[in-house]
Image (cartoon, rainbow, N blue to C red):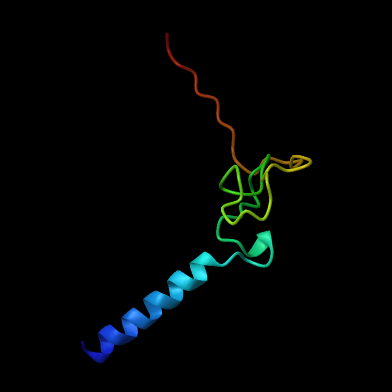
Length: 74
């Protein structure tokens, strides 16, 4: 195996180890979604099992996504 392949395998192992560890807070989680109105995570349940539910206690006051109404010509 060449040195480049050895380095690649080394970094690949490090990435797998880092992916298994839960972040210290939800804000550092790769699945954290601050702009979602009713929940704070991409998933309904925390993938790291830190919390049972990812639903917000109170929804965000302003919805950051644009709501667009489309009229269908019937």
